[in-house]
Length: 350
Image 1 (cartoon, rainbow, N blue to C red):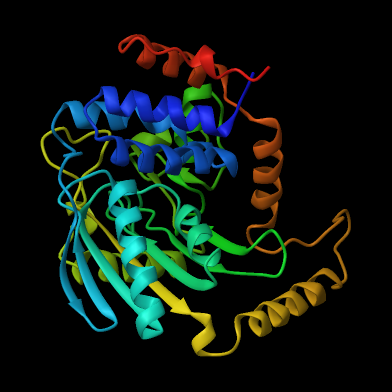
Image 2 (tube, rainbow, N blue to C red):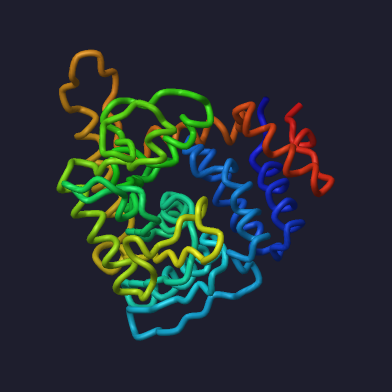
């Protein structure tokens, strides 16, 4: 059953508003969640509404606290999210970073006292639409061991890069530093599905295909020691440098109901026009992509894709045809809505 994007955002916004969030906050969070579903990243989509609502109800998120820019020193800034929803903190941070980048040519904004902020791609898309290039990072609660370790120590700390192209699909690389995002294991567990061997270990450090055992254990770093080191570097930038939590001190939003998460982010925005005319850059990047497409393909490969291209095509399709949610997610949203007199059925496309 397909749902239009605008109506799905509207439903999510009404649900969060009914739960106590101001409309602007609720809409920013909803747009972030639906943007993830649009691109096929269902682990970061509306499936998260339940835990977001619960954390707000339990006082673990303060939806009425306005983020404050504590430092604004030329091309560098520090934003205190004041424990609002990560997607709202991220939205405010992005606005600041883009505006300052156009003034200074580049801007680096650290963020502390935030929460889970959704997909990096959501922020990148907004930046590249304004002719900007961006790198965005975030740390996360401990779900991954360092190479050689057994128990979770750090998060799957994502990093994402975005560049505008001359096509409808920008270059967007949005990746966790784990072999796979933990959200995919959560989805597999909710569906009762096995996970591929090599994704994770159980609580004793043994490789497992059981999604539930993996959630009790740890996901593994991408590329072994390289992924582990990259995750640590992101933790240093987003946690140590900003004053946010880092390593085990970033609290888990599913397990810790006594303390805020204190997640840290880092936005690095570049005004491409300071290096060369935007049109020149996009033409050069398009030439790069053209050459990529001409490369010899391995057996069984019909097309070589650049980062973000598959997701961009899916987004275009879902913008046209609507988003079909898994039955379990439909049921969860209907149950959440029922508590506030809202019905997901109102979002059905004719």
